[in-house]
Length: 140
Image (cartoon, rainbow, N blue to C red; front, side, top):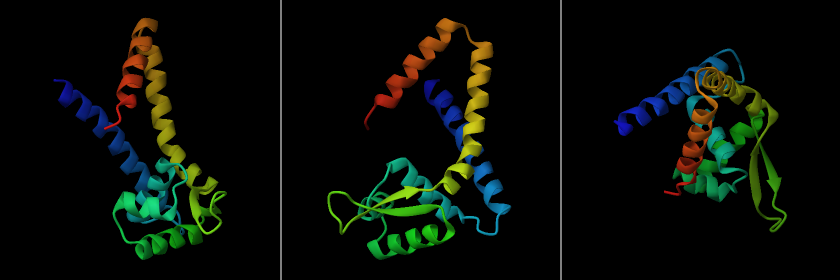
């Protein structure tokens, strides 16, 4: 039961993400391919990774990662920041342009939160929040 329910919740978020991914990019000449969108999202989720951390996470070679990153930089979705610890190394960060397109998924989440606040009791919301925090804390 929990497995099916959790999968349904996960798939609902993924469906919305995919819908917005292609919707946002289809209306823009500088739009990202699906691979570029995935790469930029990985950079966002890893919170300022180095190029090496990025390439290792998505399991591609350094030169391939550099090629993909340069395309994202050229399109204005990612920027390189010189490392404070090692001036030879760069950290990757997404730009406002990425965050603007990524915001479409935030609207979906805000609508879900609004619906939860309307349909759930205060105690149910507190319990749900505690359960989600517990799940998020799993480091698997």
